[in-house]
Each structure stands twice: as structure tokens, then as C-alpha cells.
Length: 116
Image 1 (cartoon, one colour):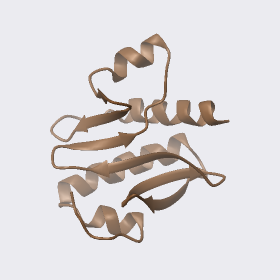
Image 2 (cartoon, helix red, strand yellow; image 1 turned 120 degrees about the vertical axis):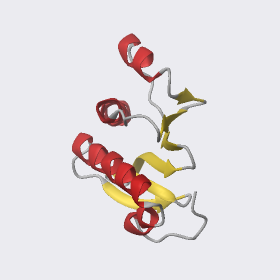
Image 3 (spheres, one colour; image 1 turned 180 degrees about the vertical axis):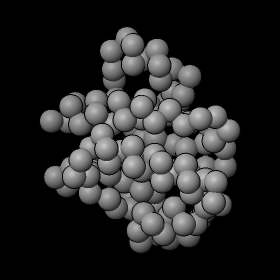
């Protein structure tokens, strides 16, 4: 993970190698599709996404995975789908596997529902 102080999501994503940048951008777009009108910022030196000023989700690029913070509680089907990625209230999506963008979008939608 890059250790610089970031002032924008573009700057954060731009600090990674091209293949990781592409994945971070895919995840970013999946979040925006699931949360129209999301506001972007940097929080704890990671991209954060908020609605009406309330931060709902953050993502982070790491050496071998993309971190997604926090994970919502979900129904049994969601819990089964997210189980391979769950790690103490967050998800770790491996960079060497296809990114489960539909699952990420579903997690975002549930966070929006739970915070409404």
C-alpha cells in the first residue's frame, strides 16, 4: 500500500501499479452504481464514499487484496456469498481473483438500506 498523504481519490488510485489501479477503479465505479450521488473523500488515507455527509464505505488497496470497510449484516444468502472474503467486519477481495463486483454492489446497497 502506498504511504503518502492523499488529497483525492484520483491521487490515491494513481499511486498504485496499473493493474491495481484498474481494479480499484472498477470497485469505485461499482460503488457509484450502487450508491448514486455518493460523495468521495479521503478518510484514514483511503477512499471513502458518503451519502448526505454520512460516510458509508471505504476501500483500500493492499499488497494482495482490496479492502472493503465495513461489511453490513445481511441475509443468509449474502452471508454465504461474502463468507470467503469476510475478515473481522471487513472484506478482503484478493487481487489474483476476479473482483466480485456484483457482491460489492450488494454490500453497498445493504449499507445504504441499513443507514437510512
